[in-house]
Length: 176
Figure 1 (cartoon, helix red, strand yellow):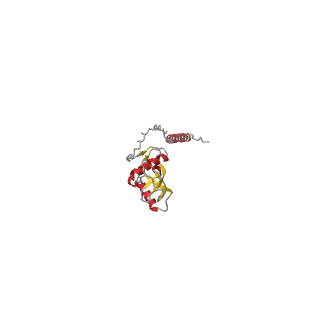
Figure 2: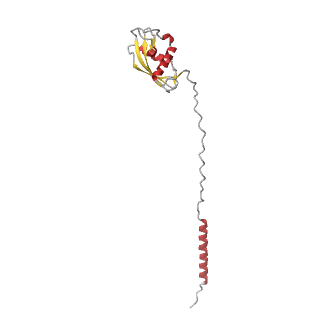
Figure 3: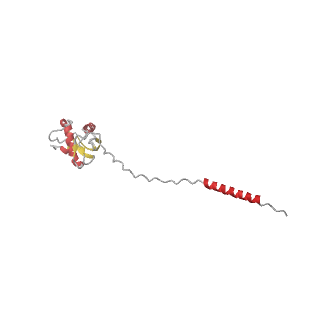
């Protein structure tokens, strides 16, 4: 029996093993592993500078009321209306029969501006008086600023003489 030469097979086997090892080493070297990401520490929250205080660009109110109730403010408002309408104020005690009597609520904002009016008792028989009272109130704006209350709604009674002169119940001299 002839003898087989096992040498070439062994050489091939060694070559095959060497090739496989080389490929394995190559594949192992080519394997990708992402680099480890190191998170930078979060920056410490910076203290933002405190916002600048709000500065009003509006001028300070010309007149200020230190009243702490609507009833107390009513006197300041009546005095203001009298100062604005000096020639229209009925002097002395009013006669027993008046042309009109009206009860008006006036809403004043923090700066003394009239922001609304509403009638509690409207002299409906005298629409010209209603219009004149509303116009008188609006023309007198701004009223003293209600600094302690921020805004105020006060009520006053208007006593209207047929001559067009008036008194407010808050400052009335009474009737004959």
